[in-house]
Length: 315
Image (tube, rainbow, N blue to C red; front, side):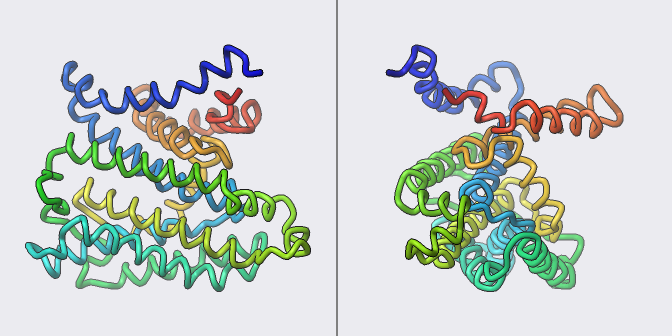
């Protein structure tokens, strides 16, 4: 029988949703309109971290190349805006799904090769592919090279002004909510259970007749598509994209978010992204070498909350 504590925990996602819906109005009341964009950034990074959590936390596939799909999605919307600005190609109804498709196709190609390796070899092969893509875009001077490229305007939606920060916030919130619902359904479905089984004992799952490689590849493609969408949203938020979005350090930061938030936890991506970005925003105001304190906090989470921040609130 659920305790009062566990019953109370069942309502906190609704409370969080209510807070998210009211947040722009609350920030506006106190003159903190700038933080609407900051909250949007948190949700975009949470989407990216959640997609990586599907691989690492659920499937046990530790990737250091996830930023490749993130950057590819961002460059998709940027190139469409540069080459076909003012045409239907810049519509979010076309450019964002195309960014997801690019991320998915790239993940299918990379995954088909890297998933044939395991352990440290898988980690290094994903990193190698991401770095190759990073250097490709670094050399594309027609699209800014190492200087990156700007978007003259955000993607368009019929009847919706995505140029308004509050409107864009709600669009990102809706997409993130849909992504969480999808991930939750996948986790409870046969697909998620098989992935967790592969993470725990891959040889046993193979002996039971499961197509292990196929399940892992599908997860890799889904994660790539979600990362591509996150990249498209981040490019729109910043009105700027650069090869640094694909760098392995970006993949490392997202991996830290996943570990901080909670491996295999549905809310782990959001918890990790929010904690990481809030610490990066707050700590520099008090300490010149704030990264040291950030490292101490991360170590504390690893040792005292091994299930991550999201695991603390689980009954």
